[in-house]
Length: 122
Image 1 (cartoon, one colour):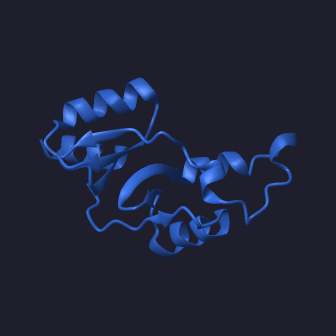
Image 2 (tube, rainbow, N blue to C red):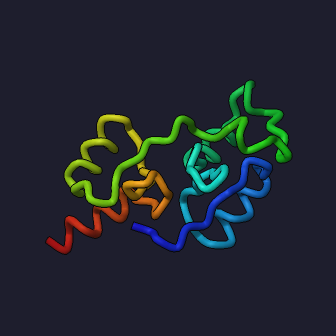
Image 3 (cartoon, one colour):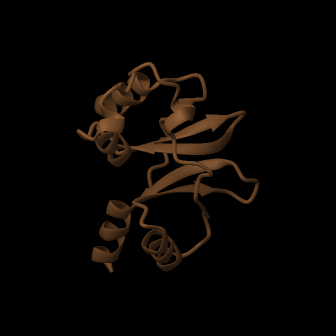
């Protein structure tokens, strides 16, 4: 799980997300409002937007992130098992889960790559 969380604000745009993903070489960014994760944007989302389909040909880089983020955000608690995380990712076809503590505060992001690394250690 990534604990050094880099996130977006609701006022950020698609271009802000793109710059942060590239700068930090990461694959997802939670969107946070008043300290709570309300959405997520991933590199997969970005690739899907840049496809050559008619509906995506005119994506404005200044589009508010809230218009394109995945929401509601799918979360898991810190104390939940890796097995539960894996099952959630598989059932929802997601590659990232937002990790929360018991107060609902964002504490990390768990990726499918994190899971693969953990299972390989065992």
